[in-house]
Length: 106
Image (cartoon, rainbow, N blue to C red; front, side, top):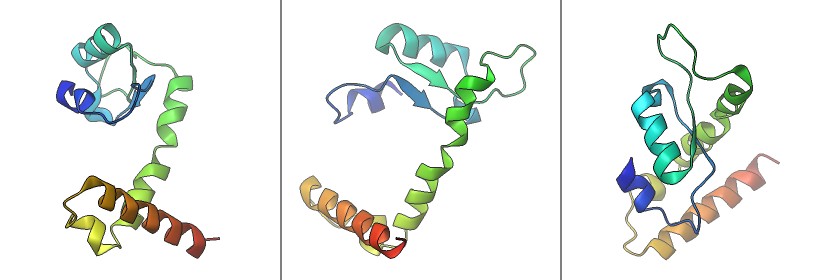
């Protein structure tokens, strides 16, 4: 997780990180809060005491929008297998695919 956050191309790190049940860990939650000041939102695995209330998990429910976008992007072969050497070209094709999907579903 530290390598992913260190290799981020964003100017600033997000305030919240939404993950699935595999991310439900006290150790990971404390590490993100202490070192990066990031709130972890993940549904609880089998725990006796719940660590999050329903308000935070409402954000998790909307996570399917992002997963659906990635599923639609798998229809574009050039994005599934990254043939582009330069990241600028790859980003251009991602933006082109998003524009194509937007125009198709409007």
